[in-house]
Image 1 (cartoon, rainbow, N blue to C red):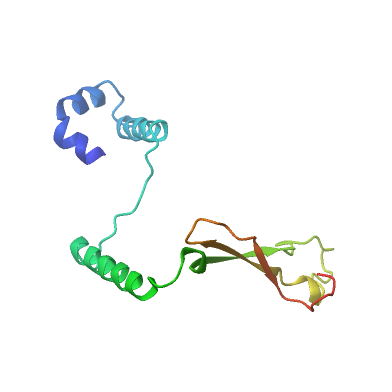
Image 2 (cartoon, rainbow, N blue to C red):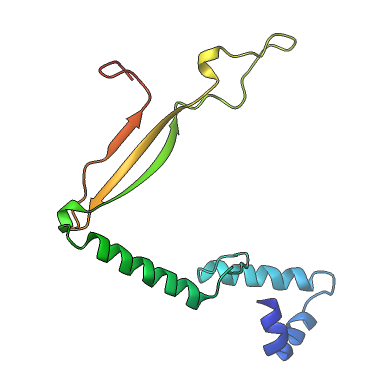
Length: 144
């Protein structure tokens, strides 16, 4: 944003900086721009470069979509599923513990690692969402 202001609004920038003490003028401008970005929903992002041109990526996408539809056109929408899974940790052990100075700070074996659960979300191509599936390590029928 500052580069854009320097190029396109040079007169405004000079008049703004002239009203500020020289030691804090630039910091004042940064604060002003930061507040502007927060107010209007801009976020700070790092520039990235595509390894391929957008036209090439679009061609690959279109080719994949065509292949997918040709391969699965014989299936009804209630037979096509989209599944996403995400892992969650629960029962997290503490990062720090209180211990007597000079005493042992070891924790018992069972408290070192958190438990992990995988949630599986499924939707059919006809729009119906299936119940959430939870996957945990354990013995069937036993207490979790």
